[in-house]
Length: 359
Image 1: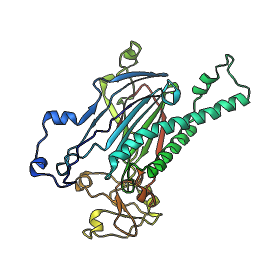
Image 2 (image 1 turned 60 degrees about the vertical axis):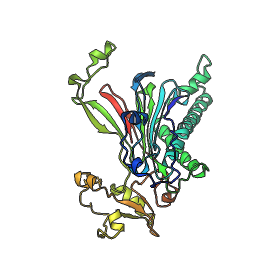
Image 3 (image 1 turned 135 degrees about the vertical axis):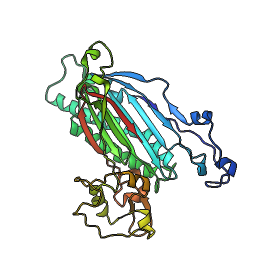
Image 4 (image 1 turned 120 degrees about the horizontal axis):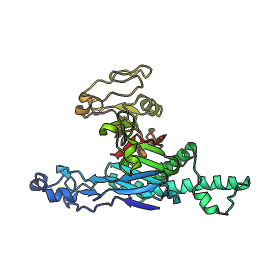
């Protein structure tokens, strides 16, 4: 399994501690050279042939700048694995967005462990198919047992079961890790498992990072270019974006109901501090600003307000997560904030041109 991973940048820590920066350090404007040092990106996109799919991929991550904490590390990480799970036609792409004091460590832990756990789960599932075929007398004529095992294609249900197990397991291992404290820290996870032999992808989402796909706006691709080895662009070269994931936050009615069953409270910071009233919440009716699916319509007022609903313990003002699923966040897990991903499996078509995984 060949992987291309983000690297954890070592940043100097001030002896004065967080929030105790000198005035000239806080007010310092970054030079272009300093900005460039905060960027981790590929110089040129790479191309890979994965079964019946040719993929060109690239990556970019930039460490943010916080004047009050100028040396705060990049809490995002990513991983790209081709030849995934010992299959030359498969690949795995993922982005992790850490949060909390040890968010950078949580994101790196997920990057270091999730691909291997998923690869192992997939191979175990393939082995069961292989052994089942042998028991029914379907061994390949040339005796290529190992090759047959590698190329055993999992069903949608088997793939999603393997993905679920790997996310739950990486979450369990993070809780046990002595090198980080995930009690109030964790990471999102947005990933895509590409099955090249069957032109299929499975997108998995934990938290509020996102996956989108760009498709030909008119629904048809220019196949003439494709046949000639070109890019196969859309006629008119216009793309339209479609969501491949849904944010898991208290804005979603189904997630609010699930979280509240644990006894958790869903309140904004202003409501916690008594600046806004806490109304009687009738979950059988749609709240103001929600669509027919019970999802909050994020308009300018909500986005600019910066005070989203959060998950709180019934016993105190913690943990205050603005998401309802996460890897890590051990305290919030008792309130229903778990690591089980929502998954979408779909076939690729000539109209599908670009997929973006982003924090």
